[in-house]
Image (cartoon, rainbow, N blue to C red; front, top):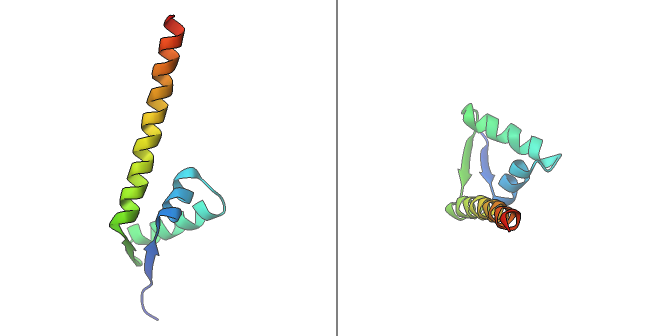
Length: 75
């Protein structure tokens, strides 16, 4: 039996990053197997861009909420 070729999509990363069980644990197992080089993996540049955009947007929203709290607190 040959090595597995694992393809990870945007949804896989979202489940992992947001801790959506039982999927997050399954994705973690896959990622660990990739890091140990037990399997080969592929991720599209579109998936990487979507995940990074989501993280960047979430960060902007958190910083925006903090700024809003500071403005309301000082008035």
